[in-house]
Image 1: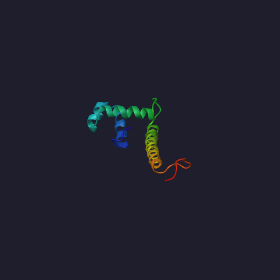
Image 2: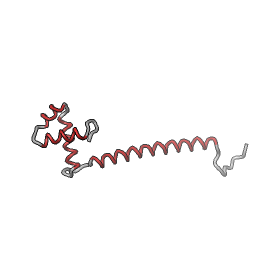
Image 3: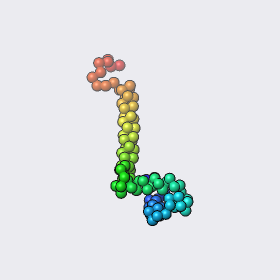
Image 4: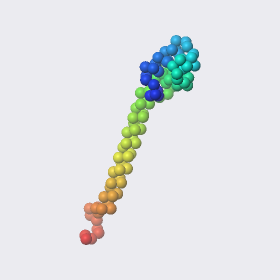
Length: 100
């Protein structure tokens, strides 16, 4: 679910819709778009197992994993670049080049 509104606010909006009120009416009263409520309702159905898709907790884990992968890839790129720079300055052991 989007992080733009607190979870409690989203829950109250969905409770109003579940009580039989029209999505457009609830959206107008709360000052949000009807599409936001439709999106929240869809995600809520996924989280409750009524619809297939990524649950909120799975989505959060996926985002965290992607963030960690990006961090590790950046660290790897920096390490590789550092190794390249060191090779330019310090010859590898066992190099057959004569000493200067």
